[in-house]
Amino acid sequence: FILPPDWEEFDPYYVYDPFALAMACVSCCIAGLISKHVPGVPSPHLFLVFGLAVLVLCQLWATIVAIERRQTHLVLEYFSRAACNSIMAAVCLRQGTWLLKGLAAYAALNMGSFLALSVWFWRSPDVPASGMAILVLVLICVGARAWVLR
Image 1 (cartoon, helix red, strand yellow):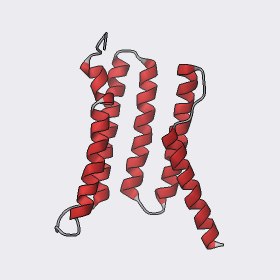
Image 2 (cartoon, one colour):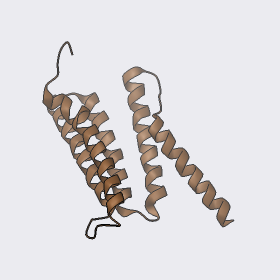
Image 3 (cartoon, helix red, strand yellow):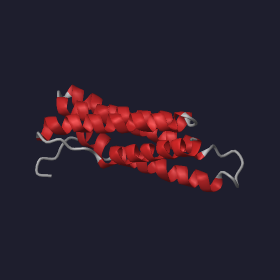
Image 4 (cartoon, rainbow, N blue to C red):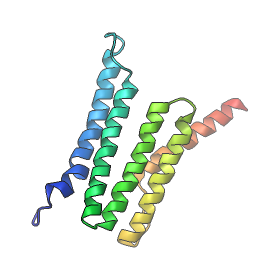
């Protein structure tokens, strides 16, 4: 960087955040591999929930730093991501029939917040690929369920 940002401003969202997500995914996969063979290892979804909780805490930390520095646009971006990921953590923890409703809420909040922020930041509407992919997945599952149950 020509003008390097403070570590407090940059690291929580751009370094620790992806690290927490990678930790969640890798620990979930490892727990899935060994949970059947080693007694006492918790379910893989609990590792995923813990990693997503760390991810949300990193995003809230970045939000608090942005509030302190009066960076309104970053506050909105970081908090909207934290809200989306907290929905995903709740869906992973709750499981069951809440899965499709939670994924639909995640997709709607993800696409809606990013659409609003992209109009504000760049004056052009944009939709994130992750929200669209999850929304398509939810629609396919709901459609298949309706087709099977008819």
